[in-house]
Image (cartoon, rainbow over all chains, first blue to last red; front, side):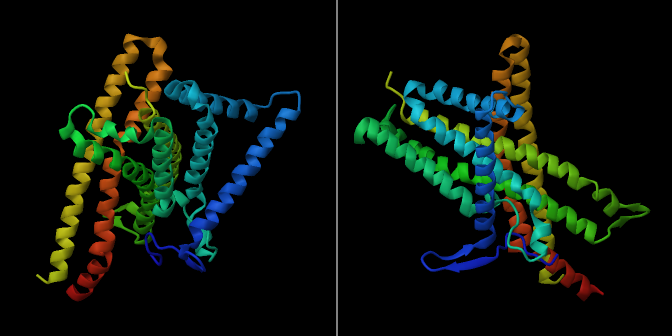
Length: 245
Length: 95
């Protein structure tokens, strides 16, 4: 296998140093694709007939809006576009793993899913964490942090660790789910490459059917993990801005 | 036994134990979540979409730690000990 696992082509940008070129390029392409697609769906509102794609998107948006209103109540209205955008964006990014390695072998720096790079998932987790802190402080003032010592004061370290581990597990869950999916492709490819025979049974040939099932599984996992990231963001925000009982 | 063969053997054994733990924990956890979901649906069939949503939410949150363990196991196998390179070196020496 000529490529290393987790190796990225890097550029050097003036202000931030060296960056992962393929992650950034794939993110830009995904953003352009998502914007064009959503503009096309929005354009269908000018026509009197309701199209299929418009109905599907309305279903998705209504579902996430219901989740937000259910958890945050009426004051959750400013956050609905944020969570819809987060879900659609993460869903698009997770599926880009389909187009991965063939293009990289041609030398084009466009490979893998951007969420298979820790540099993509950690900023989103940190973003949600900081958003929760800012929204909670704006709503409750600095007394918001008293909830860390809430039931008993000796639970302060437990609550602090719990709150601090939330962005860590958010980022790690998304990254590892997508990255292990890509890693399975590499493992199957190395088995096929080495032409393994078990007696008369050609294991490499049997392993050649696997990538289709792995791809189905990756599609499923990508959708679920995007949804879970969004839903956990909503739940953490609702926990932080909950009223006292 | 050369030290490379020892490191390769220990790493492969460790990777096997990690896979054992990961698969067992993930399977038992998913089984508990799914069985409770089926029980709840049988108790109240009209709440099915809601329960379905919570089942997938539970499975997604639950699968985080087994997959983190699997990823770190692959990291151990392929980066820390670099077992393919070690094995090719050992095979070359053994021949």
